[in-house]
Length: 366
Image: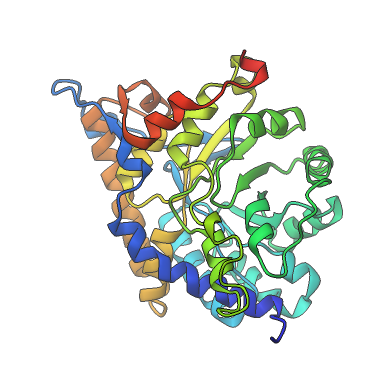
């Protein structure tokens, strides 16, 4: 079997992620276990709502952003162009896909730099994977003239990936080094999962390593374990860790786990959320469970792929609609701002409630 190149792997990821999206929209997910309780006389005027929210040193105009997706190929360049154009039109922050391929192969640089070219004044985050060095982190930020860096942890994906690295022993130490170096540089760092969830224990480790911005990025969206198995030889490797599909913490479960942290730890962290966010109602659920802002990938990916040649206009219209719907939801539930949405009444049922009830307390919580 011919060894896949890094570029072909990126196109595989993009194709297989797109194929997963219709099922995500149609299926019931863990978000449907979360109900924001309705009180008929709690509403306020939409004019009283301000969707702006502080995330680290930034002021997001609304509590959602375009999460990191792709780069490294011509198809990815075209997609990043559309995403960046839409983000610029709508004033929505955007993260790139992992720029590790561009650090290793300069011929792919333009598939990422198109983001800053098309969005010269917006908030842009570069993205690299755990296991990279301080030098790589700084190069990634410089490459995009980025306002900050996402550093993704993807041990499950690497384990299932045919060509993945399976030595994770140095990751936490490297993250600590990067956090310290970027803090010295005045560059914010966000550590995120890629769809398997960050547990309370992991959040505590990250906080102790100097990380202050985290994205729990749970299951329910693009499943990279499933993607990596779909990339395997259908005869030779069909059964390789196939049970890992669906592995991990859902986004609501991860947010509830984060809320269980000791107050001293929780106080030091700004928690973001992503993973399977289908519509503004899911954004609202994340806010109610304690997220400061919410990353969206799959839902925006589908629109961008369907309208590749309109300079991001259709996707920007979708983003504006999300903003309008969030204003309406804030007014309905009596929350003048996203940070005040954490005060609404929430009911958690189904598998998510069972998981939260059944989880074993960490040593720090006992």
